[in-house]
Amino acid sequence: MARIPLEDNFGDIVGKAQRGLRLTAGELARRAGVPAERLGELKSGLPGAAGAVDEVVVRKLAVALDLGADALVASAKNSWYPHDPGPLDGFAAFTTPFGDMTVNAYVVFDPKTREAAALDTGADADPMLQFIRQKQLTLALILLTHTHADHVFELDRLKGATGAKAFVSEREPLAGAEPFADGKEFALGGLKIEARRTSGHARGGTTFVVTGLARRLAMVGDALFAGSMGGGAVSYDEALRTNRTGIFTLPDDTIICPGHGPLTTVGEEKLHNPFFTGHSRQPAAQQ
Figure 1 (spheres, rainbow, N blue to C red):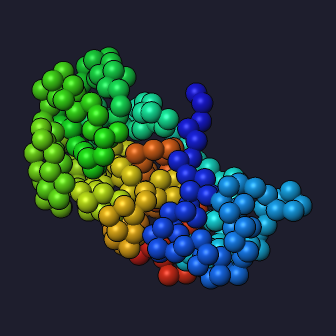
Figure 2: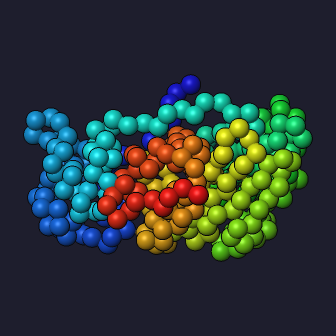
């Protein structure tokens, strides 16, 4: 099976941080002490004069953007990719094309009762529906991490095919889905699903923490990606803050299931995500 590429490259990460801090290219270049044209070349993926990543410049950018320097260098060198957590009974992931990108959706289920929940819908529900039929599951819940089109595209179809009820944060109402408050807990057979606020990329951004399987899962939508995060379309500071409190307080072995890109873990993101390894971005302690 082909490896799912990381959602964001070095240029994406620098651009998100720059926009989040509301810095013009000139302001960022001056803050980092880097020529503006060299900054543009780096963001476009052009190597240094010797054909290699200029670590000195990348580290200057990391300081200017309050990003983790080692993690940002690894991104520039394309030298890190999260470990595959391996198969997990009661869990399945679906990646479907949406325009020029792909989007992830997930199913969790109690292996004993066969009750299931869909986490987002993806852009094509066929693979998910086929899996549900093959495994003889009953889809009871459709839980939406946020309401951006690629994550709710098949909502009506998924509801119609299964009769499942859909739920969305009360901070981001959506026709056809029932609102819930932060901290809401859903029961699914022997599984528990806790809704945690991870807004900032989206007003209603929610992470669903699933317990009861062999591994804890965090369905984060676009709040966090392997080695990156969703842009702070609502608020960059809010996105950083709610990710730290809603995701990085989970145990290190928690599997993170993002809306785009590969699976990762809390522990790996603490070490390899530039947004959360900067000197003032240290995650909170485990709980």
